[in-house]
Amino acid sequence: MGALRLPSLSSFFTSSSISLRSSLLFRRQNRLGFPLRPLSTAFSSQNTAEKETEIEDRQASQKSRVQDRVITPRSQDFNAWYLDVIANAELADYGPVRGTMVIRPYGYAIWEAIQDYLNVIFKETGHSNMYFPQFIPYSFIEKEASHVEGFSPELALVTIGGGKELEEKLVVRPTSETIVNHMFTQWIHSYRDLPLMINQWANVTRWEMRTKPFVRTLEFLWQEGHTAHASPEEAEKEALQMIDVYTKFAYEQAAIPVIAGRKSKVETFAGACKTYTIEAMMGDRKALQAGTSHNLGQNFSRAFETQFTDENGQRHHVWQTSWAISTRFVGGIIMTHGDDAGLMLPPKLAPVQVVIVPIWKKTDEKTGVLNAALSVKQVFVAAGIRVKLDDSDQRTPGWKFNFWEMKGVPLRIEIGPRDVSSGSVVVSRRDVPGKQGKVFGISMEPSVLVAYIKEKLDEIQSSLLGRATSYRDSNIVDVSSYTELKEAISQGKWARGPWSASDEEELKVKEETGATIRCFPFEQPQGTKTCLMTGNPAEEVAIFAKSY
Image (cartoon, rainbow, N blue to C red; front, side, top):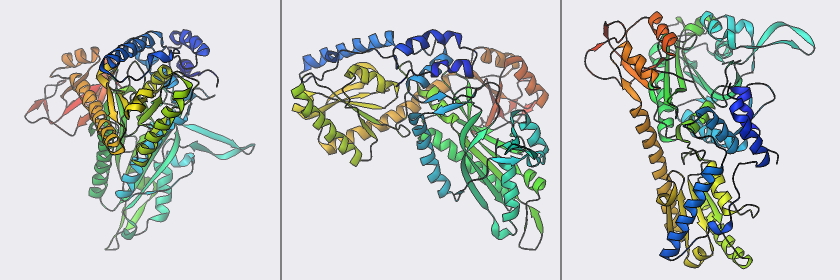
């Protein structure tokens, strides 16, 4: 396999390519950037003294790898670290068109885990999957004035087809509200046809000028839900229900403590009456808009004349919603949980929850160790645990340890000759480095081992959420004046304060600080409030932050 090229993504996606070129040269010599470790540093032990020695040896080995590897430390250059992790964890590579990416199997497996969870929830809440064409007549986009104004700079247009100039140029799908409404108009006639609730998993093209892998690319994958209702109350209930679905997913599956709330008028989706959002704090304290749900009101139904006849024979335009989550959530997982060793995946979304690394010195030990490892793997498979047995003999155990840490696998099991003799295994946690995260002597007896592993996976899931929540909360500053807001933003933190100022003053904050209103959180403090900008009464607090 050739050298990974993704660290040079910086020349395609960002302006920091020069700082990464030297590390790229090293990667051409060593594909993964992991030093080859001697087998002697990774053997299981049985008695206490040997265990202590082994722990120290492996700790020393780990320190050596930290010094040797080519991942840029997060604290040194967060963007370079992010690109290094994507490369070394084999999540994605760059496409031949600037700003595009190829999602590699491991990265796509994370997206599949997201799909698997959400698909079940969507169907439980009454939605059906379907698919709409990728090409949309330009006249559709023009029908909703604010929509075309909002998306015009990002549109990719097709003007030639089959060697001939098209009579009407086509838009490569930036989002599907327009084509959905065109079809809804043909399908909805009576109140009996409502509610109509569909979802599609699709690709989207937006011609972004500043791109970043997973977070913002010219083409990305997402799901987009579209619903039509007979009343504004139903539409509002649906929009809120779906942002709740996203919030629950973020907390319980991705272990990301998002803040759910309503967007300001300035930040509302083009063509929507209200936009609800979940905002996540990344490891560099920037905000990531991780999912949105829009109450579209009757804006699109009026533009497309999507109407229904009610029980009394009266004609009305339908009320609509749309909501989406995309592959940028994969980037959010990387930037929320990753560390200097690479990825750190929440167990519920990890493609591999447990990796088994067999260890032997002598040829006559190999068969027994591999048989035991295979037996443990089969136990996990039967228990529904996603497991990988790394039984290749081209790499040392130390290299494998480092590699699977890079891939963010939550638990590692080591099995050596002495473990086979004692009928036990060694278990290491990805989220707890060193000896603190390593436990010896866990019985191979299936019921005991499965119960232990499932317990540890649950602990890791909770630990990641707790850690991310503490980080988020320690980096949100309550402010009561514009001076305090500017100070908080200058320190790289989020600012939370009362707001009732105008759109113009909101844009002033963005111009002067680079921060925007991320949302008005659903959870609001009690008591009277005074706008931090104007001194006038305010009903809500808003969160300001710099964002991706």
